[in-house]
Amino acid sequence: MFRLFVYLNILGAFLVTGLHIVEPGPEYPASKGAIWPRPQMQSIEIPYYKFDSDILEIKVMDHDCPILSNAVQRSLAVLRDMLRIASPYVNRNAPQQVLDDDTYDGPLKSLSIYLTSPCEEYPHFGMIESYNLTIAADSTLRSSSIWGILRGLESWTHLFHLSDNRDQLHINKGEVHDFPRYPHRGLLVDTSRHYISMSNILLILDAMAMNKMNVFHWHIVDDQSFPYQSERFPDLSRLGAYHETLIYTKKDIQTVIDYARNRGIRVIPEFDVPGHTRSWGVAKPELLTHCYNEYAVDMGLGPMNPIKDSTYTFLRELFHEVQALFPDRYIHIGGDEVDLDCWESNPEFQRYIQEHNLTSVADFHALFMRNTIPLLSENSRPIVWQEVFDEGVPLPKDTIVQVWKGNEVYEMLNILRASHQLIYSSGWYLDHLKTGGDWTEFFNKDPRDMVSGLSKDINVDNIVGGEACMWTEVVNDMNIMSRVWPRASAVAERLWGHESQAAYQVYSRLEEHTCRMNARGIRAQPPSGPGFCLGA
Image 1 (cartoon, one colour):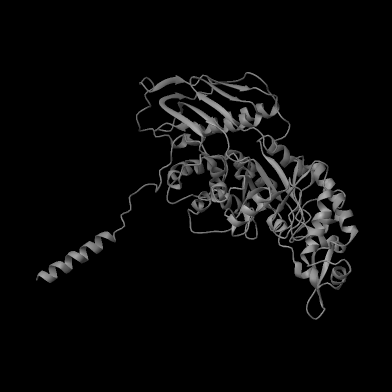
Image 2 (image 1 turned 135 degrees about the vertical axis):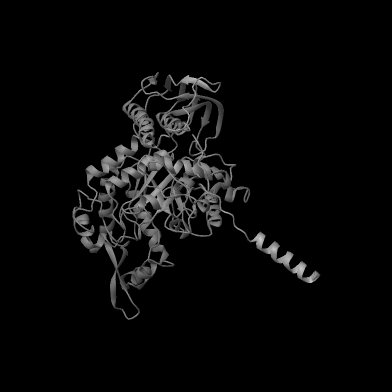
């Protein structure tokens, strides 16, 4: 009997510890009025103010410009939409909000905006994005830069939250002093593997502004298609695009640039050379190299031909056209995944190696980059993928190297020791999927923290930021928004927000921010588990 008693107790203990009790409701209840990304310094008080569009006045007290006036109108529209979207969900049976209690400080009367320097025409690397925001009956927003004002206005809209019965919009008294940790906070979007419509590109820019990301890295062409419509070389898209309608015209590109500029976002184009250029060869086969197998059979076209002068003549004209259209000082010229075996298989290249005493086929990569970088416009700054650095290609000191492969700590240390700036992407590939809630994988990557303290001869500030990368082999207009957001929001938080927080502190805020994006037309997927967003 005693043995049976012990056995039953052990079995009971096992069964109890194996229980999984599920409570009703959201797995992570959303926060209310939390700024995304988390500000560097913020104080929130209990007293609150009520939003009334008939009372609130937004005053521009100092410098003004169309970028600022447009941003003000967008912010007011956001607040009005919050009430409009919530109106079908007002809890008519709940007690009306009491507005004469000790925590209610009256209506929000004004927001005075102090922009202390003239507006810049375009966002740029190293721009000032800091701001100071004070929430009171008469609130103030201050910055020395239009870009800081844009970030502050975005934070201001995040602070508003619905009352318990959802018929009022409240904002708590408080202070925000904020600035980004990294100057380069980007999102790469590949529009070659699948064409992404203009409407979705503009929505992506809206979402980037909500997440305070400031670089749209436009990987516009690749092996599969050439959707960029060149005025100088129209056959490139006429023959290389998937379809004559699936292109980006000069007008389209200007629309993207202007839309991004009004949201403080830089647009950096990438024309990846000498590899990833097969679509170029549909119209310009003479640009590319013939590849041979071991039986000297021509297997088709590979990377650009680096030993023809005509290759560089063409690139000079194309790059000058592109850089006249895109105002940013930086241009990404790729350099990754070059098929060196193709060059090595070509008899013409074999003779060239002997005649010019080259030590390896990798020297062709160095030759190509050494001849291509000077083709860029004066005062340009190149960005390249890490292979260019890894293969010993001589690079100007102001070249930024983008790290994307494994063993990223070793890679970053080598780049930093060479005194180059770098941007990090290795752990932020959005096409790599795991079971729901994988945003924590992205959030837990902090490139400066990875290398900090590992070497005395590096400057971690030369890690100037990073980019989440949306490669589109299996992504198109139907799923790009839900694939990117809110997963890229975790990258945005890491690149801007307070460095000391852990992932477990983020769940509730990300729930609210996802609903916020949904309400503004961004079809972001649920971030972490069961929950809901009203009106979205």
